[in-house]
Image (cartoon, rainbow, N blue to C red; front, side, top):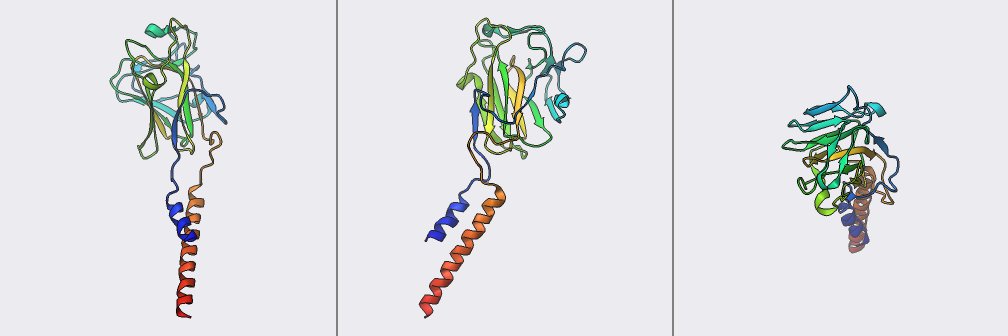
Length: 231
């Protein structure tokens, strides 16, 4: 019975990690930051579809693209309605969405990550929608973070301010993000391939070793029972 229980338990082990929205970068480990500071002066993009390489300054292959003309990568003023504004040079380069029809996409081409997030803001009440969605390499949706709906950012009349919002997994499987929200702005993108927190996922190879071991125990127990019946 014990062997059978181990076998059934092993089949229940997840192949992928759990997703969770996060509202702080405190405690994140092994992270790298893209501050978008290269998108100033003559290296600015306004209302383009991409693809645009945003990871070159840190030696990574990370690309932003869009199906419609929504991408801004530049150093200019950006009004945020009730949340104030981001000023020229105040954020020294940032990523923004306006006024396209769909999301922009950020691909981690060097491999999936465990966590990704931004120092960000948006434009309530005129444009209250702002979401972050994470997908695996097969295009499967892992998690959608409704920022405006579940963790709204309120910075009345603020200048160059915002808050951190992101998505965290306990294994590296975020292959790309989709950002949606007309008028949303993003800076200091932080990401990591390291497991975060205290969660220790079971490696796939180790999991299948447990499955095989449990199967051997089941078969051995069954063989012993048959021998006792025969004798």
